[in-house]
Length: 167
Image (cartoon, rainbow, N blue to C red; front, side, top):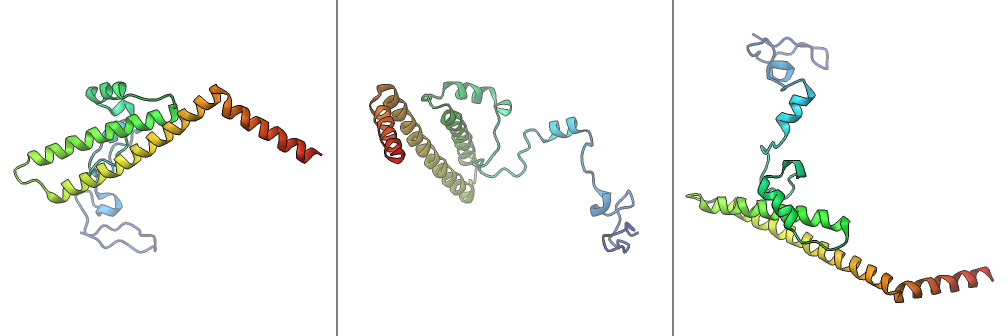
């Protein structure tokens, strides 16, 4: 029995039909729940394509209780934009370390997976160092502005430029 569905070219599909009379391309397999709420519940926490977790989407709602505790404990500096990213990278590191430990506990740990996890950890460490530098520069800017020395110097130079251009 063939599918018989009309293709984009206008011809009849000649692929083998499944139980419902259509091939897998034309409706033979389930597409999942049609209700958006049920679909979102089904997709929440989907880890089918997860390899190392370096690029895993993390939101606060999907954190385990232990990860939420870690999120609250991670020390931060005043710059709010950097803090959230820094906390998420710490959680990402925690998850990668858990996957690494789980792989090592296996009877025959995969060298390929271990190497991928190590490379991911290295890239995350690089991002953490960048965030620390960014946070340090933001902190030093706010200290200089409160101190007045750099802020005053910038405003004096700006006034001199305005006077020169105005004359």
